Length: 380
Image (cartoon, rainbow, N blue to C red; front, side, top):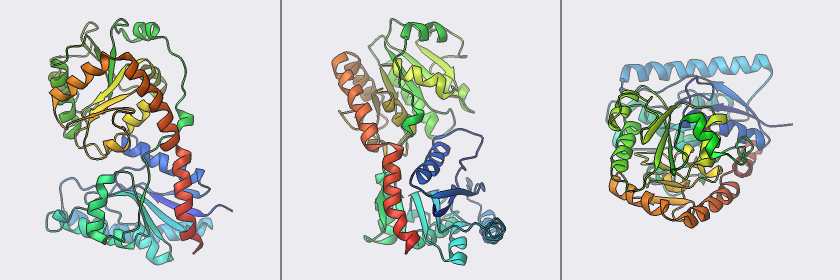
């Protein structure tokens, strides 16, 4: 009988209405736990994120977490379901887990988390209570799965060199990534694109902060590009006007523009464009690793991206694409020009992208790691 596992994502629940990399990975983790043979259920959709650093709110959330833990256990008792393990995804000082540790203490079950980070500099700031909560959860955790290798130093600073850290490669569900031949000319007619030019593509939400900074670097890079390529931008959001301004456009309706804004697309609409494009490009300012970059490679689309944080965990330099110095528009433009001038190199990257994703970044490979690490905890 499958072992019951309670799942929680305090930053953004897998049931949240707004698409994002966090929501996608939360859903993928639940799928991987199911693939690994566990009876996984979403414990709560409570979003704990405190963007402003409000100590009063943090105290209230801590109290609410204790109350919700008790309510959850009563709810499970009525359903005659009892988790044998708690699994939290994406734990950091702005979005702590106020519920899971309380449940684990009351039920005496193991606590596990994935993509957790620790920043000692937050100990005395406005998020001090949240920061302490993250530290308490990390000390409770019997496994900490890291999808971003740059988190390891902080975790070991918190827990010491014997921290129960397990590497888990970022992954996607390849069964949902249908691969088929595409007709570039037909796609060009469908989206009013120029089929005679190489296509670069970027896929990202348009919001202030790191995403907007990436779009501005992308615009600066395009201004230095010598190749006659067309850039397709897939995404939308609250910073849409600022993104348009960065590329010198007032609206997205100009069909002759070098940059074409396609808006938010469904996977069925996006996948053929990824197959037909020549390169994915993204500056990746402060990017954890970039699920869109991994999805592109699953379609055989090589990636050129800024070498920030965990991007190297999904873009394998000079094998599935290229990593360039962070936040350097000139270096990004130069890498694009060189790659666009070498079709044979791009084909090598295409072949390697398909093989690497299947070998190292599949849902099944993630499920195998989770099964190996979690079953001993559940049966202990």
